[in-house]
Image 1 (spheres, protein in one colour):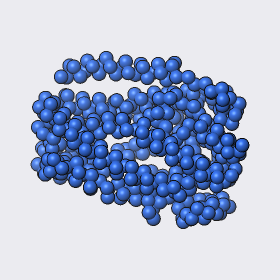
Image 2 (tube, helix red, strand yellow):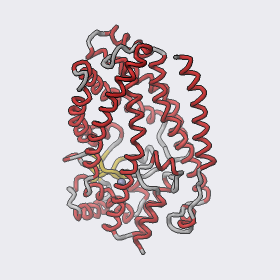
Image 3 (cartoon, protein in one colour):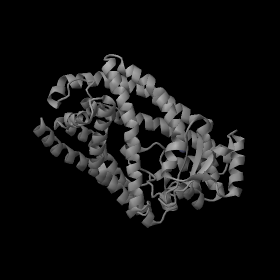
Image 4 (tube, protein in one colour):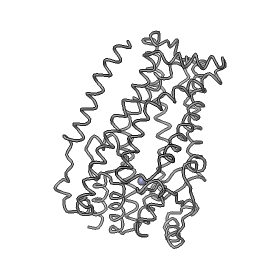
Length: 418
Ligand SMILES: [Zn+2]
């Protein structure tokens, strides 16, 4: 099995990487469709030739890393199983303690650390790329701190979830997926609730808006939509990046509208107001709650499929991997492979729904502000500052874009004018 795994990986992975390269750099067209040429959505009308060239290069390299990274994680987990590392991690945990309250966290930590090290080159390449193209301005040590911080936060949360999950698997052989889902619902709600006040501030500084004049304009806008004013924040990102962004997150009393300070520094007030109106649109249309509902619903389906598939997989290959039964913690890499395949398979549908919501928020914003010039200007500046791809290849849009392309967004705003 080991030989087979190494052989197939050594043959198929390079072929896959080569096909991705061919598609991104040679097959996919990058030109602007005739219908958009010369309009505000045509990047040559608001970017210099150099910027345009850099944005194309930068985006292609980023896309390449993304597509290479997709099968990598599943391959690492499969390697852990095939090479018998999983029972070794488990025995190590048992060596420390026989109690699963300690044994499982040690197993999760070892597996996470192993995966983290093997995927580090991709993370590093992504950072290097962003620095080379002048987007990221974060120092290596600060970047590394953030990366390690997310490793520990992720591992901590994962440990809790996995300990509970395997306890359920041991107790309820046939219904664990259902009980796990019942427990996940309050967990998702709790995580969404604490995200803006507990997790996000670990990475960056959040504060009220600095500019009182702009704040008043924003508050007026928020007032029109009945949004409590204290939910507008700025986050200090200019020490890390030149890119601009804004978002809404959290739920209930922790729901927040956040603007990166780069957005505030680079856009005119009218343009910031358009971006704000877009975020208000998400708030008004309850996109966060709809998203939460979708996550809860899809996790039920995901858990059920994982339950069915995991039983089959362990019955068939478990013995060869040293995995005794489904509720044996060493089956975790197999569960992760199944979940990551499911999440990959469902991502195009999720992204398409997200693009629909983003389009609705753009529409809301333009109707609220009635200022197409500012709206178009804000998106053009967002594109230039982030060197983003105005018109990405079809597969990139299909697998990566949670927003409509800038070409679609700008031309939609332009049409509003007519
Ligand atoms: Zn949005």
